Length: 196
Image (cartoon, rainbow, N blue to C red):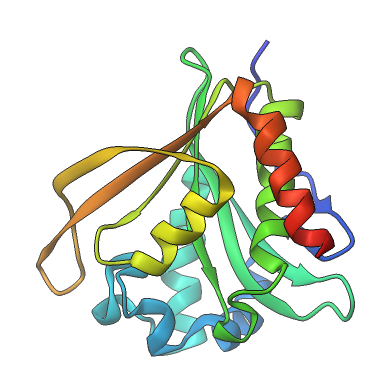
C-alpha cells in the first residue's frame, strides 16, 4: 500500500533532513540566497530570490504546506546547506515529485546532494511504497540536468512553455523519473558516490 510522506527526519552519515520550520529560514536564507543558486531558474529565477529572510519566510512557509519540505543540514556540525521536498503526491498512481531542491554553492559537487537523494528516494520507494518518482528542472539548468542524469534517472521529455518565471518569461521543463524497479541500481550508484 502506498502512503504519503509523513515528514519524519531522515539521517545518514552526511546529512540530516528535517521538516522545514519557520525557525529554519534564517539559516536557509544565509545558505541559498545567492545569485548563483537562482541564476538557472530555481524557484522562478533571479527575480524570485527573496530580498531577506523575512520575505523568504513569508513566501516559503505557506507554499511548503502543499508538500513535505525539508531543510538539509550537515551531520558533522548542523550547518544548514539547503532544502529539498517531496510533493505532488498521487497515491492512486503511486507517484511523487522530488524537487524544490537548492544547495549552497559551497556544497555543489560534494556528497551532500547524493546523500540527500539517497534518503529522499529511500523514503519514497521503501517507506512510502511509490512506484514512480518524478524529478524535473528547467531546460536552461544544465548543471541540474546533469546531476539528475547522474542519479540514474531516465529523461522522459520536455514540457514546453511549462512554468511562468518571476520575470514573466516562461521556462521549458525537463522531466526525469525513477521507477521502483530501477531503485536498487540507483541506490547502489548513490551509495558508491558517497563512499568515494
